[in-house]
Amino acid sequence: MAKTLAQEFVKGLWEEIPPFRLVLGLCPTLAVTKSVENGIGMGIATTFVLVCANTLVSLLRNIIPAKVRIACFIVIIATFVTVVELLMQAFAYPLFLALGIFIPLIVVNCIVLGRSEAFAFKRSVVPSIADGLGIGIGFTLALGSLGAVRELLGSGTVLGIDVTGASFEPFAFMLEAPGAFIGLGLMLCVMNFIGKK
Amino acid sequence: MRDMMKMVIVLTVLASFSGGLLASIRNGTKERIEVAQLNFVKGPAIKEIMVGSSNDPVADRFKMAVGETETEKDFFIGKFDGKANTVALEAFGKGYGGDVGVMVAINVENDTIHGVSVTTHAETPGMGAKAKEDPSFVSQFKAKSIDSPIKVTNDGGTINIISGSTITSRAVANAATDAAKVYLENKDQILEKIKTF
Image (cartoon, rainbow over all chains, first blue to last red; front, side):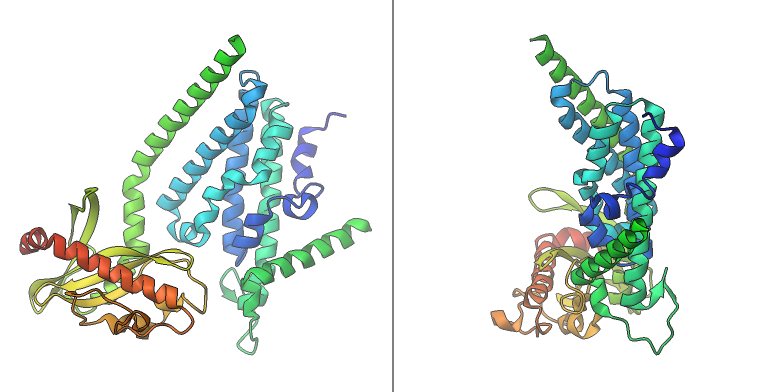
C-alpha cells in the first residue's frame, strides 16, 4: 500500500497532475496562462507554497487539534503566499505585475489546501515534501504547456520568441478567457486520449 | 475545556509566528520593492511625461506626508529651461478592472498639467488598456488648467473618451483631478521643497 518516495513524487507529474487529471486549481490555470513565462512563474510560486505548507503542516500534525486544522492550514498557507508575494515584488517585479491578483489567490487554491488536508496532515515530513514537490512541478508543467499553446496561437511566440513568422495572423481570442477554456479543453482531450491507450 | 484551551493556544501561537515572520520579511524587502516599483512602473511613466527635462526626475524625488491620513507620497521633480518647475505625483482612479494608476506632472509656474501617463491598470486589452498604449488619449491632458476638475466629454468636460471605454477614461480623468487636488492642498510645502533642487 505504502508508496515509495519516488512514487509519491512522480504521481503528481502524470497520474494526478492537478489541472488535467484532478481538474483542480482551474482558476489560476485559466487566468494566468497567457504566456509560457506567466504559467511557469505561477507554477513555481504555487510549488514553493505547496512544499512549505506541506512541510509545516506535516511537522505540526501532532500539535494541531483536528477541530481547528483547517484554520491552521489557512494561516500557514496564507503566510507562505504573502512571503512569495513580497519576494516576487522584490526580485521579479515584471512577473508580479503580470500575475497580479492571482498570487494572493494561491491562498484559496484548492490544490494547496487539498494536499495539506489529504496528505501532509496524515504523513511524515519527507513524503509530504515529495508530494508537494511532485504536485507543484506537475502544476507548473501543466500551466507551462497550456501557456505554450495559448501563447503560440494567441501571439505567435513561445517564451517571447517569434516562431511563426510574419505571415501568421495570431488568434487574439486565445489570450482572452474563451481561449483559456478552449485551450484547456483541447489539452484535457489530448491527455485523455493518451491516457486511454 | 482542555481541548478548547489547546485550540486557542495553537492558533494564537501559529498566528503570532506568521505575523512575526511576515513583518520581518516585509521589512527586509521594503527597499527592494520600492526600487523595483520605481524601475518598472513609475520610472518609465515619469520619463515619458518628463521627456526633455535636464535632470533625472526619477532620481530627484522627495517624500511628503499628505492628506488627513498622512500617507507618504513620492514627488518627482523635472527641470525645464534650467528651472525646477514641474512636479509629478501618482494618483488612482476607479477603472473597469480595479484601480488605474496615473502619473500626473504639474507645471508649478502656471498650474497646468504638463503630462499624464498610466502606470498600473487591469483594463480590458484592446479597450481600456489603450489608455496606456495609445498616446493620443493621455496627450489630451497636456496644458489643461487644474483650477477646475478635469472631466471627460460625457460628464461635460473636454477630454474625449477612448471609444467603448468610458469607465477607464473617466478613471484617468478622476486620477488627474485627484493628483491636482493633492498638489493644490500642499502647494506651499511642495514649492518650498522644489527650491532645494
